[in-house]
Image (cartoon, rainbow, N blue to C red; front, side, top):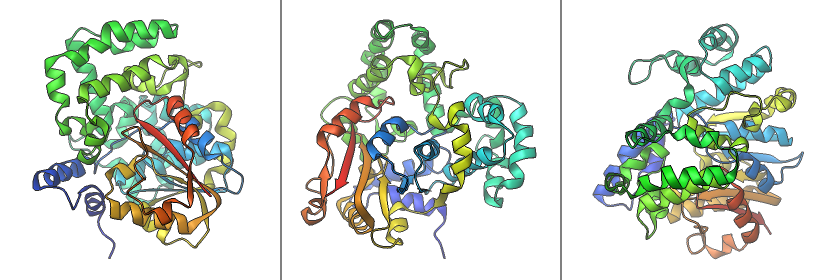
Length: 404
């Protein structure tokens, strides 16, 4: 009998070698992670596609999360994409997006549903165009209620990006900023990078020196809303205070990329995508990609399964692109070894593995046996460039490994 979703999440998160207190924190995070966490994925798909060098025969396996990137990869014309996840809310979101690409009448409907995502008409569109094409489990999820009694589908009439664990975390951050008389949206009005830096240094940077903010961010549970489990918290902080690490990451988001080319900044500082035609969107939501997305949507398959279990069931040399997001930050050495054993077995010549880490360095050396890792080339110089180019700015490192 398959394990229930809640047990799959708990098994993935709770560290068997942690202390009793560490396991308690892990279980608290696992409980929080069972609902919707990311209405939008926070890895830059433009960086991903450059690193993956997707070819017409590429067979991709990725962790789904919000499914934005899996959909965006279709614009690069791979042969097939399998997106896996343990979180039933993320699976329901991905399947809803697939149904929307297939069955909404035109691009305007898709844009209103997922780019604006706050129009009352979206609920009626769901009922008429999407619900009849969803499996029973996905339909039951969207028509069910969340912990505070709201119909989940109504998130698309009131701002879906304000919901979920991350949406709530960003909302609390906005509330805290306003207590200090700061309007986060001010940075979106900046016309140059110099203006963006001025706003950050005058308004945002000082917040991280506040005693309450430093006290709060020193507690691992305070970052559950970012999807950061206790195991990843230590890697993210390193030897620094967490407030200083977060300031550095926010500085990159606020200052290193023009806001008119960074939809991650709009989500962080505006809690939505921009409304004007010139405002940035993920590749899958851009009008110029709509036709190819509809043409290729059947190449994307979403499944509820552990990443390792999925690839363990695949034939030898049958895959060539692997996207792990930041999941390895959660893994102990034994699980990492099992993961890379299966990746290496299923990898075709020229295979590429892409992942992110909370800390800057790759976490694999010394943890995955050398007889496995030596078969892979770590593209160190390229990885540094991809890290610099990642507009989401959350992660310390973006890492690319290529099969020798």
